[in-house]
Structure formats: C-alpha cells, structure tokens
Amino acid sequence: MLAVAFWIGVWHVAAVVVDQDLLLASPGDVLVRLAELVRTGDFWATVGHSFARIGTGFLAAAVVGVLGATLAAASRVADALLAPLVTAVRSTPVVSFIILVLVWADSGQLALVVSFLMVVPVVHTNVLEGIRQRDPALLEVATVFEVPTLRRIPAIDVPAVLPYFVSACRTGVGLAWKSGVAAEVIGLPQGSIGEQLYQAKIFLSTADVFAWTVVVVALSYGLERVVVALLDRASRRLAVGSPA
Image 1 (cartoon, one colour):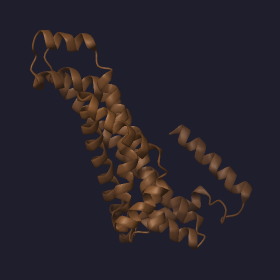
Image 2: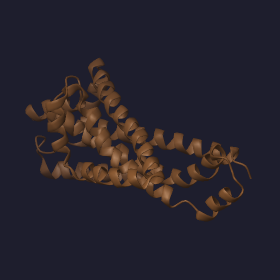
Image 3: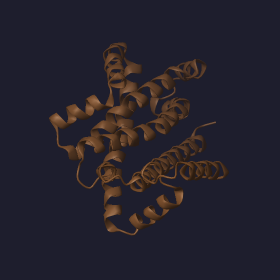
Image 4: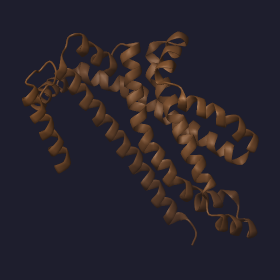
C-alpha cells in the first residue's frame, strides 16, 4: 500500500508540473470520474461484457495449454508438431491476430479469441517445462513399485508441475487483459471497455482514459488473485490427501 501511495504521489506531482488536464489528468480527477462511472448501470454492463469474454479466453487457454503440454510430453511426434505452432503463435504480433479475427469472425468474440491465442503459448511452454523437470527419482520409484497412474498424478506429477502452472497463470492473466482490451479498441465491439477507451480518445477525455485503465488493472489483479488462490487451495488439498 505504501508503494502504491508513493506512485500515486509521483503521478500527482507530474500532473501538477504538466498542468494540462488534456495531457495528464490528476489522480483526484480520475477518482472523481471513476466514482461517477461506478454509479451507472452501463459501467457494470461494460465491465461484465469484457470480463466474460477475456476471462473465458484465459480459462480456455489454460485448459488447452495444459492438454497440449501433456500431449507433447507424452509423444515426441506431438511435441515436434506442436512446437512450431506454439512458436508461431507466440511470435505473431497481436495486431495480426486482431485483423484476421475481424476478417473471419464477429467483433463480439474478438477479445475472447485474441486473449486465448496470447495465453496458450505461455501456459503450454511453462507446463511442458514443469513436466520435464519432475524428479526422476520419484518417477523411478513409482515405476518400480508399480504405483497406479491415478495415484501417481496427484502425488508426484501435479505438485511438480503446479508451480510452473501458477507462474504461467500470473503472466497469462495480464497478457489476456492487455491483448483483449487492445483487440476491443481496434474491433470496437459494442458495450466493451475497449469501446469506452476509444470514445474517450475521440473526445480527448484523459480522465476517462485513466479511469478505464484503472478498471482494467483492477480486474486483471483481481482475476490473478482469484486464480492463484484457487490453485493454492488445490495444492494444499493435494498435499493433505497425498499418501505419506
């Protein structure tokens, strides 16, 4: 909280020095504008619209990334086939995906598809690395004692891979929101945060730009904390339920 207060102070000093609301709105002006927005039903409808699509894209990417990494770890052929695809998706500029999705599909699903594509390579790469870094000694013991797969996965595999998956989720949530909102700014789906940011830019309302940016940061942080908390809870349950 002290660090946040420090940077808000820096922001306030910068706004005083610039002394041009058009260039840099002050924290007070942004807070007032944000309070005005929060009291309207359109604000919550807009937040719900973007959250539903970007959140769905992130969750779908997490599932597909884990499945792809599992398949790549189990089969060299699958790994060889998936590696160039993952590299291509990771290296392609987000604007290229935005343009292609606008050509192929409706702009209403743009944020979902783009956030999905941005997060999949992160989850795939991290989970695959986690699978490959499992303790060989534990795996050998499980093989020697013929531990059933359904017991080995929660006892050995998941605890080893989970930290990598948590790291991927931390990075992926931010990527999903940044790419998803950027897609909305370009595609302008009705009732989205990206549309509101674009309208603020047209009307030169810097306070609105900062206010909606604060909303995006808060949503990204909140989703990250929820996901990490759920994964931590799952990790503790596995630790309690795993055999000694």
